[in-house]
Length: 352
Image 1 (cartoon, helix red, strand yellow):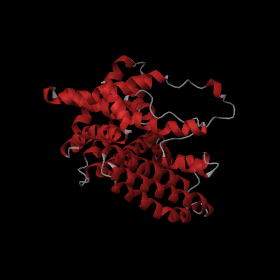
Image 2 (tube, helix red, strand yellow):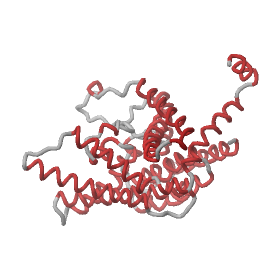
Image 3 (cartoon, rainbow, N blue to C red):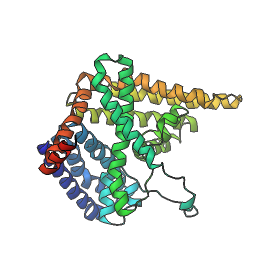
């Protein structure tokens, strides 16, 4: 664990150095191809840095932050677009926004911040933390649990784990700088459709960056020779394909095995079904039909879970990533205990 922490520190020192180069040198290069070329060495470093980590809980988030979010934000930055152009008045802001899963809220001039929806109450975050702990404890009895119930635990683990990691990483930055950031999740279990799930509720950090780097450019290019619905459909499909490919890359950092393309197929399937759903809703609305959200919502969430069992989880399960992730919790507890002062450990033992 000590070696892993040391590697993590070296990775983030290198990352900060790279982002200083982007802020002071690359930003002085005219936007466009020349700036993009100047950023290629940074892209290469971002792709190889997570290979120095072997743990699930350090390697996975680092790969997501740098390989996906970081490179996509810098790609937009090379053309003077995206969150790094809109929200980086100084070097510290630039580094945090480029390397962490945060995006500052952009208020229209006529919008008052007092009109914004309140953030989720703190007790909800604590409840999710408690639920994650219960899921982890339930793994001790996995030999006696039905396989379908274990898949439900995995789904809950993925959702709660990603949301809590993103929230915990962003919290210190929000506290220090007072940033008002865009939401990272929006209670995906309340989704009313696949479109609602993927576009407005699930991992909004990734959704926003994909919308800027893939969806909008593809739709703009397609609108010249396709109908608005056709351009939207093509843009949605390409966005899901890119998301699938990025997940394949993240899976490689977690498993260190060649891709099987199952997770890409999962996202292609989600994209196709989302496009069909949108087209079907337009037809239904023209005839005055509408499926009640109490029906469409559970169907959408169940569809994601069932197809996830078929295509999203198998590669992780075959390579033992689930057992590795579960085992790391015990390693983390032992590591924290080993770093506690000896007198505090004796005091705690005496209480117990």
